[in-house]
Image (cartoon, rainbow, N blue to C red; front, side):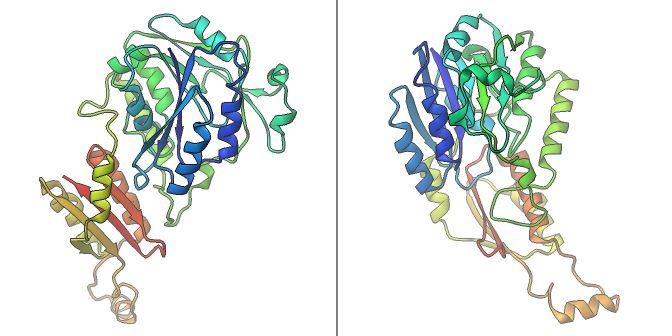
Length: 358
């Protein structure tokens, strides 16, 4: 079976519909679609579930990760673990499929060989309704460096423990998968004989990164960190990843338990207090649930603090909440991503709440 997987969270439903509609006219019907919703807001999740239900070739799966950063690798792995055989194609809700895409993809299938496909890109202002699949070729096209739209043998992916779940937010998980396949002795080939995929234009998500704290999950410089991690994997000829756990997502029961737990630790933004928690208290917890709230110290912004600092007297040092956000999220991604946890920024941007089950 040819499995098409859409990793999804809170995206425009019109794009999802256009992409799914393009699969209704395929010359081969030997495929199955899974929309893996990695924690959309309740109202959006309900809407996309209803949309997907209108297509007999598609199913919807919801993961209770609304209060965790985006992790495309884990969304894909959670679905991958449920398959025993067949082919695994990583899709994108912005993609329009040529009517012969499935037919061609199936014809290409060879044991132990993965393929990725050239993509044509529309520009701002282009209307998808006015584009014929016969004209896909005229648009700007991807090169071998664009590795996102790939087809893998399920058995091969599972041998390598799927996609590397270190990559959070926007990273290089697709290229990493290609590199690890090659390191393990498998072939990866680029198909550019015919353009069978058309990308619907949208603003770059990476360009939306803000230097200040926001309710959206962000860590400054995470894209660069992910790419340096990829470079290290290339140098070290990395193959199998996720050695402790892979494809395990936060369960509904754990999500509800963490949501309903009362705060049992409050911290200020004093540097030494935050560091004592990260490097001392947190690693020592065992068989318990911690729910933490961090707020800015009232002393940090007071006139008394300002005067003391101006006079050269000894005063505490403080992190901004943005700095704490980046430190804490990186700490979670690095050391606690396999544990049940939730993470929230206060709507007023004055607090951070973090709950974890250890």
